[in-house]
Length: 256
Length: 192
Image (tube, rainbow over all chains, first blue to last red):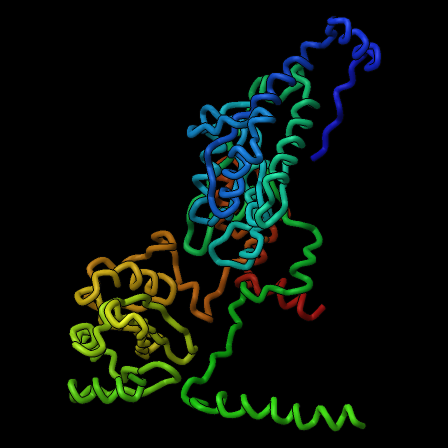
């Protein structure tokens, strides 16, 4: 996440000295961003096991309320932040994109966990989307499987830093003609149509994963199947023998 | 009761049913016998296999196999696995929904993943994948799409929805279309 800090024209030391005397110097931008970052309302939206960690983060022990983000809204219209907590299946993708489209500006997105970043352990699956960033822009990627509640808090703080860095005079959501609605994919005969939105995401130029593993799941070359009829009792018979052999062979080798 | 005893028990009460032990399970040689066997096992006073725990499939490339796990709520300890082998191209298996109502979703899933045609099922349609999905993803010859490359359908869809597409994607899609499927880049990579 690239951002540059908003720099104040007033010296920080002077500011804190004045603050001790009860004089606060600030800019409208700072005040505005302080208000925005201190009350991020996330959407009450979980997809898989990461949602459990998200719930734990909202509960008393980790208490996301300390960072002002405790108000989980059940409607996208009232939410500032969508936490994609869990595996995004291809069947669920249109709904996720639609929910993001329905959120009011300014809106932010955190992908929580390996699945929503890249597909995670299910990356080769026929049913799993390889990362929600193929269809909607993501502000903070939060790795982990699942990330601990502390990690989610850190992700939220990172997002707060980004919000602090934004200038409301240049903010995209105040510009005219802003169109931040993304095309909602359709369910096709083999997967999603389209497979990704090229305006949001582009395939990697160097795909190390493909170089290393090829595409075993893509081409369907699984040609081995166990033969159940041929050895019904053979696997049981040799099993006790090897330990005996190893026992017999092991002591002589030690003695030798 | 051991597996052989169960086999003899069934054969004694249901003459004409051919059973064959395969590992720790019983293969019902003729799939059409399956409802008879399961109905007998459910009603039988000794075995009382009155709970159908799961219906799954296995792809052995030359044939498909449907596997049933039966448990007894009364005997607690006992379980029995039944297998049925069917042709890959024409996988017709009699449905167990009339005997076990709980088999409905299990059979729909087996149909969704392996393509078994359960004769007598009241509502046989996909349960996990969406309507309009083509193919059975758990079969070993299922060819998955390459999700890193846009096809011509994707390009058409994107242009229809007003999303700008770079030239390279369009060229790639056309080359895939003329070259036939997405095997070309893969073969290049395996060579290199």
